[in-house]
Length: 505
Image (cartoon, rainbow, N blue to C red; front, side, top):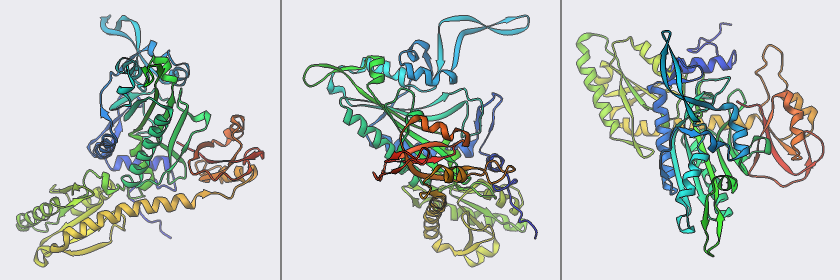
């Protein structure tokens, strides 16, 4: 039997990591930069980030937060104030030690050593905490709710575009509260905001839960996470929300006078998501013909492809294409005007069609002389086969496109949810079954693994060492705990906690 030809090689089945890289390349989303581990995000990739950013920014502001900007450079002494924090980030920090260059023997060398080294922002708890200590005096100034959109640097040894890069883009929220209960509620509120954004906008089915001690953010009391299953059945931590208690407040002297006139430390939180969300979207939805983008974050939702068989048809076909584009641009999908492009490039129709398939645009509309005669168009959707076309009368095009965008958005979520449920095991109760599930099926395909296991865990940190060799970790303790009693899947000891186990990125 002849193997079916695909636009992307290798396929997901043949080499999933390389398939991922080739999808990004074929969609012209991003590329590696001259600086190892950093990426250049090209217009199509950055357009996706802009729509993620726009939706999240609106949600963040609707919950009462305001945007700010803090410096990229953080004095080294600031990080030293919270022991767990500096220990957790020490190996990932890029450090500036000099402030100028001088030419020596024809080469530029750093000179002018700084009195105190500056850390290039890996995260901003410490520098924002220093500002909070000056901004907060009374309970009347609380809660203090801020967010910033910025870049951060973490010196990664093994990098992959969008998933793990030395420099990446993110938002980081930071808040200070008068009570523990209020800070905990803020942490959970932002976790829920991430869940709803990921499911409603990125069409990513999410499992939310609390991280075990070994996976917590350095210095946090509790870290809550959003975990998403990729098509290779690994987990991707897609966003986190941290309850910091008074740890950072004590390190940075964030104190306020309470209602009784007493001085006490504030309770703080931090939370963030990054351009990693784009990597998750790619791995969760794309296929062997390229990228598939949920309509709500697609830079363009519809491309109109004029078909011009003869030069004398060109003006008429282009005018018809522009007229359809104008009709669609007046329509609204999910609160925004429909984003349409007319591809007038002088390229063969088949070549342009495949470029847009690989870029993952939700809807392609073909128009030519025969369509003008019948006052219709041919509509193709990315969630269906590339040869699957539907004739639509021009009077019905607006309603058809709006309905199709909603159908595609739902289709991507439903497919991803079905995949998650098919590979989420709840019937594994002992370590032998667990080990078998997570052991590669054969030595030639070491990337193959089972999926997610939801099972009982005794809560003992030492028990996690048992699964180190399997490259499996506890992804989270789901918030929807059953509270039932059972035996720990790792140790066999009595256990009541439910945990999600998986391999991960």
